[in-house]
Length: 316
Image (cartoon, rainbow, N blue to C red; front, side, top):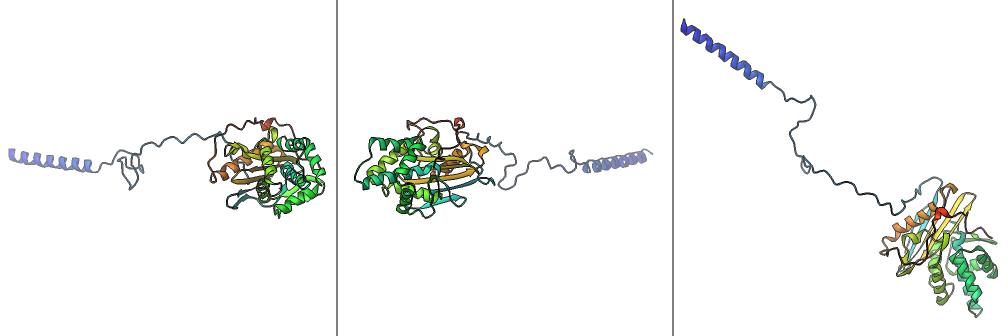
């Protein structure tokens, strides 16, 4: 009897042990259905426990962002002439625009050329007229020189001398001369090289362009204020017309000549065109030479949002 009980007890214990084993084998990991396996895994080239990445750099707000030149109501175009090679880089949209006061550089150069042909140097008064026309964009001075020099005749002479094939005058209206950025860049280099006025007076005119001040001093010079140790030579033009702002920026350096032209809604303000000129210049000139620190021009800036004017080129 004792033996039978012992055998029965052994059978019961065996059955209990087997049942417990099956229960343990069939248990699942304690995480929700469909959740990934919590055990770290490594894929080739990927750290299973990556170190947190460094924070993104803080954006640089020292330079205005590039204006949206794809806006349906914005027309913008530019041309950069490398004076060392003759290569021209263009961008933006195609076609010409009105020059506004930018064409005053041509008036000054051709007037000086005419004086040379007459065998004399400019008088003190004539030099003052040219300086005021360029440095502070004086329209009255420009009109005086334009009429004395033969009006459209003097502009057509510059067109011929500089081989400007996409430039056209409007009789009696120097500000409404139309020109492409490529022709404007070529004109700047042509004048600087002494093709219109001879080198002594061409050099003097470029030096006058280095002294532009007041509301007309903006744009390209904000991206590249110094040209090989001297203030950059510039002449801008800006006017509100029936279709909005017409803004032009011309700069002539020892190695390059750059023109940026734009037309856009009046509500955008002059600062939009100024920022566009600066941004395009910063991008294009980055590959042509190393910029110098912005200092030492000796010419004060004027905040463009304080400019209460509709332009500087409306006189005929």
